[in-house]
Image 1 (cartoon, rainbow, N blue to C red):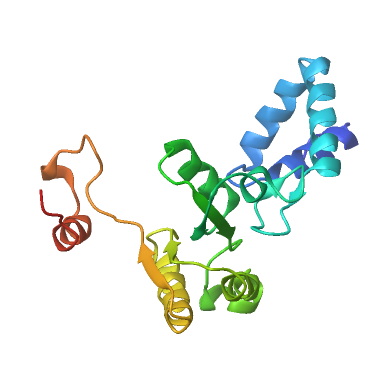
Image 2 (image 1 turned 135 degrees about the horizontal axis):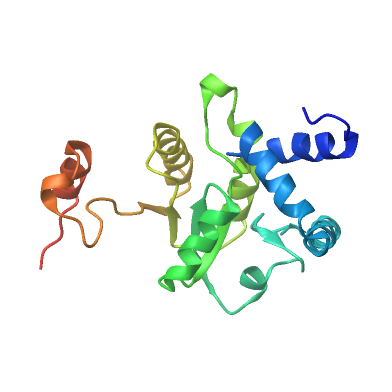
Length: 197
């Protein structure tokens, strides 16, 4: 707590709510902002703008200012949908330039220990989209965590029953890695997923 400054204490408290920001980091950020009042105003304006303009796309549930988003309203391959956990995962795939289909953002993964069930995700909306479209493939692009794998298996079971091809992102050894430093689980997946040259 910062003595003699209720507003600064409140700012530190709000900054601490951000992921990965503890008490010390929040204090450093607050004092950094105080050194430049112009930074505070610019930050406040950008936060207000984001709050009033950014929303979720009604089709894919990514973040957008226009509804539907540019990807959903653009000239993309409508026969393939890539399912991701969060909007930032969509952005990572888009940066690669390798995918020209559509997306669906779940806004999380299944996690029974944390109380996250299919009802907490955008699974119902995904299934509705799949029923109303002529799709040939759904790419499951959840993370390779325990929860991401469980979500991928759950979705695969639902989608295969609809007669749609389901694929999963490949996983294995990152480009530029030395084999001696690759963990056994990654090596095992790379060997099982090997391709013919």
